[in-house]
Length: 363
Image (cartoon, rainbow, N blue to C red; front, side):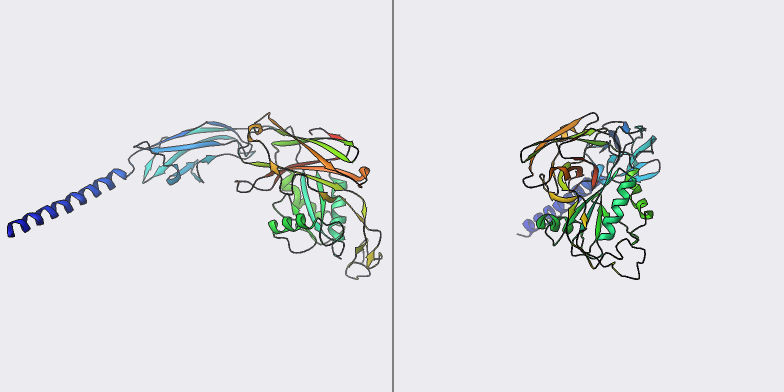
């Protein structure tokens, strides 16, 4: 019996030692000893959308990009997607590092894309209401903005009055955290930095960042009216390769709508030069501009085919809009290309509008 116990003791010790050695051996083999970096392309357009995807493999051939640091010209690059914004063209030395092991180095060239074939527009969605006594300020201001810059568009999204599309406006405000009126949502990224001065154009510079962006998409809209139907063909053109998921938003807006407007500027001595100072506490004949009337695609849009999202590509969508009872002379169609949720970029990419029954070519 003692001999058997002694034998079992030796066997147990052997198993422990063998197991320990195996674990040490496994740990040692998991340590990085070499890295090989490659890219799906080494030349991209510096338009902020064209991407070179970096791949890093260790000595076993396993993909380890997610656990490496990717370094470009001395700067750590987030993730394994390499892209450069317009104006940052040039050559970039890229390599990966992990466990104090550096990979081989690649040179990626970001070429100057040159001027875009499409102009850049900016859209502000004005969250407003006829009950809101301060709301005439933003509406008046953006009418002046648009009169001075044809690339600025504003749509009035009404709340709590007879022009409101309740479920549409509430979902839009909820998405962007809008709880006060008036509030302007700029390109579906943030709220407008209003300086509070109704007659001032100074804060139009707040839109400059968007208007100076080099544009990789353009929109063309053809419309025709048949009875009570407004037929719309929207085309989205691409001047670059876009890997992010995009959506098309279509809006029907009506201009020059008259509805009584509460006015807090009336006889308000804090605003003596205000154009509504002597207009009464309620302006009975207030003209509301570019009021949202319907959204054929839904306010957050429908998918754009990724197949067309390449330089020189084009996406086409057709919609029929019921305009029964609406004055066709005051109607416009607005189209916007927006980033879908969950993408590396967000907001509106570009926008365009046209009077109902008219056509608007790419510009």
